Image (cartoon, rainbow, N blue to C red; front, side):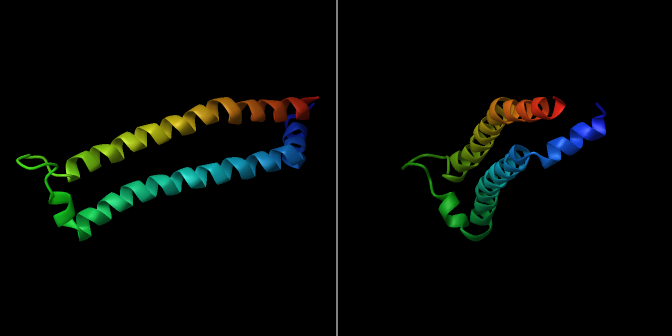
Length: 104
């Protein structure tokens, strides 16, 4: 069987179309979450410096902006791990099943 035939069969498979829609939707949602975190923090820096300059507690030297910045970084790591885990399990399994069906 030619590779072109397999590719054509994959592209015509309804499971493949559903898989592409699901994966794209998931990627868009994850991207929006990342942009909200990053741009939200940058907008706070730009427009509400007083809030970020607020001290964590009385007598503290650290402002609330520092933990929020660290929170953005931690959020980035967590959301990336979630995406990678789903991509390596569910997405790969679905892809393998679609390719297997098309190769018959």
